[in-house]
Image 1 (cartoon, each protein chain N blue to C red):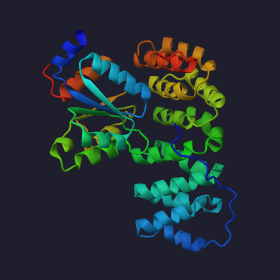
Image 2 (image 1 turned 135 degrees about the horizontal axis):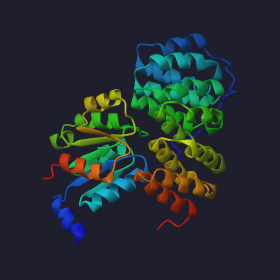
Image 3 (image 1 turned 90 degrees about the horizontal axis):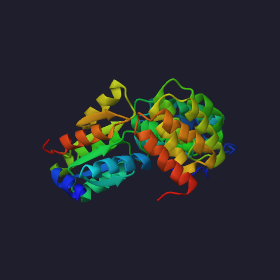
Image 4 (image 1 turned 60 degrees about the vertical axis):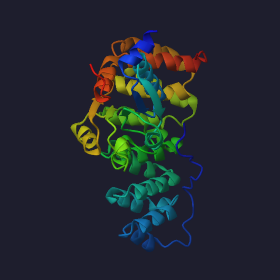
Length: 136
Length: 206
């Protein structure tokens, strides 16, 4: 069972993917599950926030431009939560926005790392593993 | 998926019994609640577009900005679209999202601007512009997005267009999508997105 082995190698880490694009969610999910992560999805910041408040995750991967609640607002809200486990959840922001100001805004909102789309499967998995605290 | 229903469009709504001076004062009130309620009261008022535009430019409250965008959306004419379009390039992600949601609600008014938006030099604007086709009639959305994809050099813009086509595209898009996958073969997400889009459009999704 290659997938199960891969899962053990990633310590059963759980990742929440917050992106309004169903194609992006599918792509990330396939790549991350192939690497052994367990993946949950949310279609915007509001749904993502609800999931972080009711489920335990090791990492959140979040887009910037989303309806209802964008990724920056999501991160600000996440970081302001009273529950330290939620407020301190590692966050990888992945966006098409490639300007320095966008990255600065992401960092100010609490992103631990920022990748510009398109992101390769290898880069996605590598950064997810690093931020989720998986031994490399 | 539609984010805002455009049902409240009322560009020709009469302005009888209004209090224009009072509304202008309300939009510049120090109280966010007053600015919010004023913006809501001005929804659909074509004569209020200049005042709403001025208020939007200086508004800091996300809630009030959304109310102003909604008011402009309910006007739904060329002038109101022209006020909102520049916010697709705003530095603030929340402002960009509010503009997209409002503009998605008035696809007929936005349609004449699509070609210019797709020619914008800023790829981030072109990406957000693809979202504006989501609520257009399928044939029109397919035509616009396919024309964009055929000439677009940025993989993220193509990916955004493919995302919308996945939902609203017709079979006429399939050859364009196939060419796009070939052109961006070195960017794995694009061929992946194309394969999903074609499966959904052709009804062969697993």
